Image 1 (cartoon, helix red, strand yellow):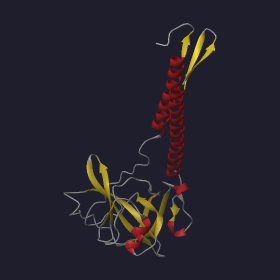
Image 2 (cartoon, one colour; image 1 turned 30 degrees about the horizontal axis):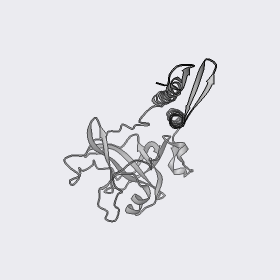
Image 3 (cartoon, helix red, strand yellow; image 1 turned 120 degrees about the vertical axis):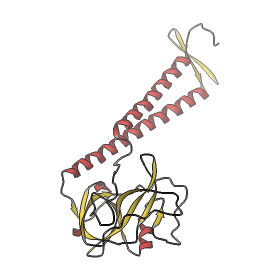
Image 4 (cartoon, one colour; image 1 turned 90 degrees about the vertical axis):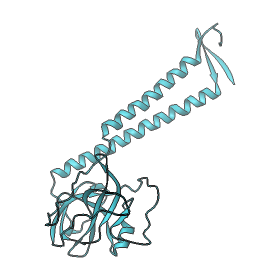
Length: 252
């Protein structure tokens, strides 16, 4: 359906399908632009919290205060011991092009509260049927320093982890604190502690730690937002250019 609307020396040709299509994509691009702006704001908040933590005294785990996702990346410390022989390996952790695992070990305070501690990264080795042995964690009481990390529950995985038959070390695709706690026979805190340091043992050096706060900074999100808004603007201009004609010109 086409309809001509005179506008001065021009006339506007209204066509239903091109109009609806253009409107749909303009709205879509604008929504994506605003979504990227929201992501940029969220990442800016995360960065500010991380920098704030750099100059703040760590929260004491012994004090038992409520810790929620607002304290993401905030420093914490506590005295306790690792539960040796109960390592959890987080699969698909690539560093420098090398496939590897993050080694997570339960850490228990004197009052029995237990936290899953990410001790760092190690290469996978030949295959997943013969998992590498992680450096032994100490059984002594230590003062653990680290940062709070609430795992992303929306990470894409090919298949869910099977906790029906538990074998240590436990290889997982995602940090599921409830099911890992069930396998350990303890109730885990609802967050992971990314260890800032670890006591060196006689058996091995501490695992390397290169924590990525955010994969993509707010600057890139701002850049993507500009691109989406720019595409919406260009599409709007193209729609107007192809819809207006000089009076007396042909439709061809």
